[in-house]
Length: 118
Length: 118
DNA sequence: GTTAGTAGGTACCTAGAGGAAAGTGACTAC
DNA sequence: GTAGTCACTTTCCTCTAGGTACCTACTAAC
Image (cartoon, rainbow over all chains, first blue to last red; front, side, top):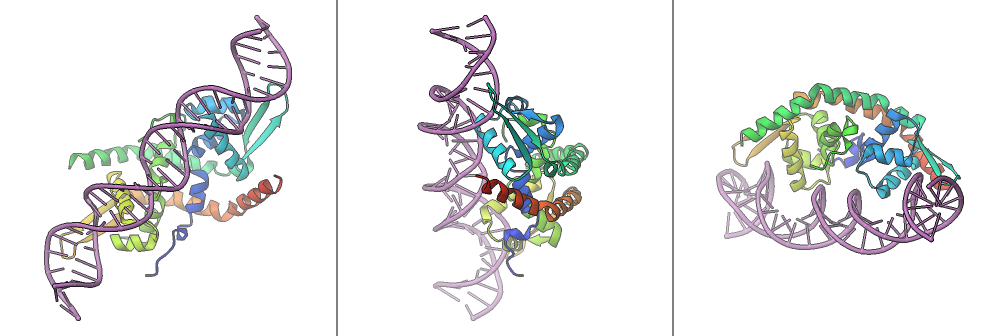
């Protein structure tokens, strides 16, 4: 058995890309509510700070999952939209939501069982 | 674990469950190579430390995604196996691998484009 | 008697992610 | 002339996940 590096797990890159902190709610919100402005995102997600929201949006833009449109008005207006590439993740999100709906109670039960037997 | 502002995002719980740090390679390895011992997991994943591996395995066991079998021999033997519930994630892993294979190059291209225009 | 192997446990420590709060610039409405 | 809006930026600070290193009991084998 040869030691296999962590990259032997072929989904590690996409997990980093899509499921790192805050990126999932951002992508979900953009996918769900369509093109929206910075403050709309901020308010919908609720507890995210502007600094982190900016960081994550820049990263998502760099990765090509989100497109940013700047309107040089006063006050400035910036709109974010999920890209074609980002939208291709929608079925996966849907699968995850389905799995959640079907199996999350089993996780809760397992936890109760585990905590009960100790 | 953390305050739950991401309630607007219905997949946040399952993301915490399945895609938090180290859990994905662990689940993937168990799903790919079947039932195995602690050291086998350790060697296959490569860079994980025993402390963290123990922590994550405990958590996965508590969540019902992994089953642990202890054999009181000398030296002790413990086997880990993915549970039925854990195995139900396999299609999602497969989807992610497919998405990777099909779209990861587009992410790389997007990054080059982004870095090039700045 | 000391080394190796197993499956961890424990104590300590550090890097870095992320939160809080205030600032910015250009303009408008009151 | 002051307050408010927007989309951030900057500075400072905290917290904790994860890494390092060492320890445990038990036995066989050398």
